[in-house]
Structure formats: structure tokens, C-alpha cells
Length: 215
Image (cartoon, rainbow, N blue to C red; front, side, top):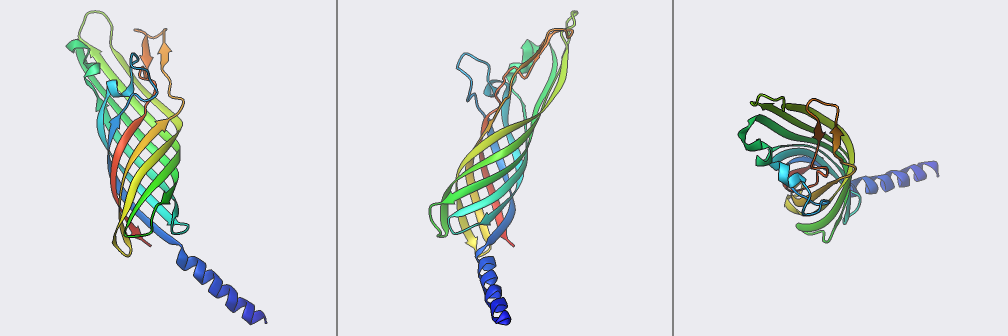
């Protein structure tokens, strides 16, 4: 009886394990800063940053035919827009770097070779924003700072998996990163006084293309 129970348990576990599909891979993305969360008369992220490129490692576990759980660990970089040119009153360098560490879930509308899906990720964003302005005027107007912040955020996705082979998927999606609690910080005692992250919100939309390979 004991051996029969072991055999039944073995086949039950085998059925569970073969039903679980694990995929890992990578993707590249092109991001667009937005002013979502700011009114039309306020300075926003779209005003201060350019479009940028990013890369990411991703993984998916098919919990069943219609649901996946996964992770997204990515990096992206963006330069500063002409907003920071300051009428050529000096030399300026600006950059925006983002590292994201997210977990996600997705629902698939089919289990065919083409699988459209809706997804939602949430987790932590590490933001590194740098401004380096060297004024060429006689007065001291030079500003230099690097703002480093951990912020929580969510990222809804609309995309599709396209089956290239039994163990390979093309993953295409549009993602919106909504980063919480991003605020401007004013330093009145600095010389000269300045505002760190005057754009406040740092939300953006990205188009991503990647490959996933079965384990």
C-alpha cells in the first residue's frame, strides 16, 4: 500500500511539473517621457528629458494556460532635453538613469500561437538624476547635483506573445511606468539656491521587444 501511494504521488507530481512552463530571456525598449500626473501649466518629465533606450532581463512562469507570474529587472538611460540649455549661458550635462526591479502577472486571452495579454508589474525603481551646469557668467550660477532615490511604482502592460517554436516566444508590449512619491526638493541655503528634480513626476511609456526561451 505504501509503494502504491508513492507511485500515485510520483505521477501526480510529474503531471504538475510538466504543466508548469518556465521561460527566461531579455528585451530591449524605447521609452518616451510623459507629463502624466502634472497639469498642462506645470513643468513635467517630458519637458526635461529625451527619449531613451533600455534593456531588461525577464522571466515568466505559466501558472496555467492563461496566467503567468514573472519578473523584470531592467535599466534605461535618457539624456536631458533643450530645456536645460539655459540660452547657452554655460556648459550643461544632464542624464536620467533608471534601474527597475519588478514582479509581474499577466492574463492571456488565448493559448494559440498568438497570445495577446494584459499585465501588471509592481516593485522598486532606483532613479539617478544628474545635473552639471557650469555657468560662464561672472556671478556664481553653477549647479551640480546627483539625486538618487528608491521609489515604489507600478507598470501596466498591453502586449502579445508570438510562438516562434515550441520553446521560443517573441514578446512585444507597451508598458507605462508610474513611479510614486517623486517630488521636487528645494535647497534655499545652497549657493546658488536650486531645486532638485523640478519636474517631480517621472512617469513614462515604453515599447519593448524581447525573446523568451523555455527551460
